[in-house]
Length: 23
Image 1 (tube, helix red, strand yellow):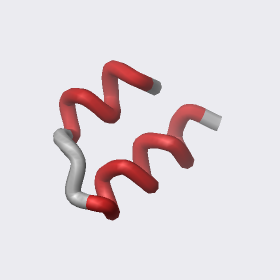
Image 2: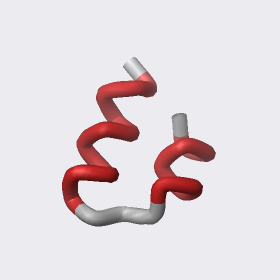
Image 3: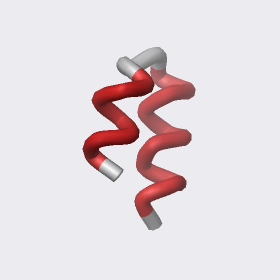
Image 4: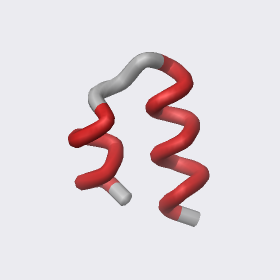
């Protein structure tokens, strides 16, 4: 579930570190 959230954020152009932390 977390991976999808990260992928969606990364695709939007969000910070990879932030997305990874959220996951």
